[in-house]
Length: 270
Image 1 (tube, one colour):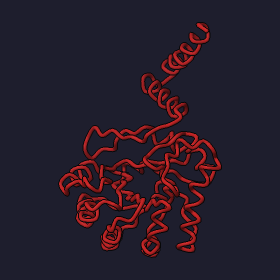
Image 2: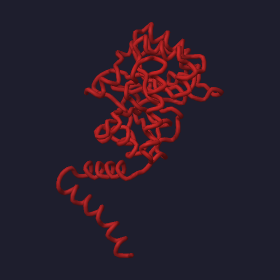
Image 3: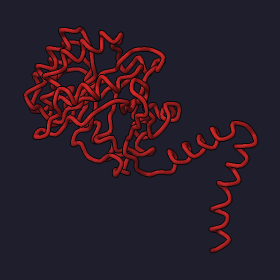
Image 4: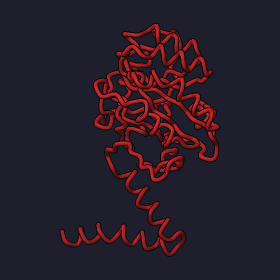
């Protein structure tokens, strides 16, 4: 037992020493830890760290590592383009106002919806499609997908939503997937990839989902203006009263800062 534990400890140390001397130094060692973590961890909560306003954050995994699984969280950081997305588990009375603001600014976004939203608000879903927005998969029941190890169960969550969307709109759903609560595993990313899905996380979000604790306009602008960055994939929630009230002004301010708006497909094509 002692020998086995010794080998288990020494093998990664040996590999890191080799990585250092064969090229790359400390950066290579950091990348080796990153790759090992991404491959070995069975569950992750998507997370971001902001060190400087206006600059891209650091994330749980690098864009290059995620791309192996057709997963993304940020676009080209040399271009002042925003990729705006909305998540919605239910209709809270604010989506129409959000759609009005998007239409006014001629901005097209991606809505990640769950089964309840499509079943209870088919007219809004159809409006999203008619106005040129993309409707994508946030799963049917919004579970912790990283706890699902069965490919059949995983596929059912995505497949049931596809079927509901097609029944309401008569169209096939775009195969973009966002893990509920940002909970994921490498195995999940592989499952989604095998189903032809692109997985999208985000590089900017803020706490906007508590109905009884909505951020003020000032709090929202502090985060959404202060932390906006080139290539940002922004996550907002349709259920937020604050978002519905500030979106017109927010889009104007972003435009005044020199930003334009792109589609998630643009990131895939980069």
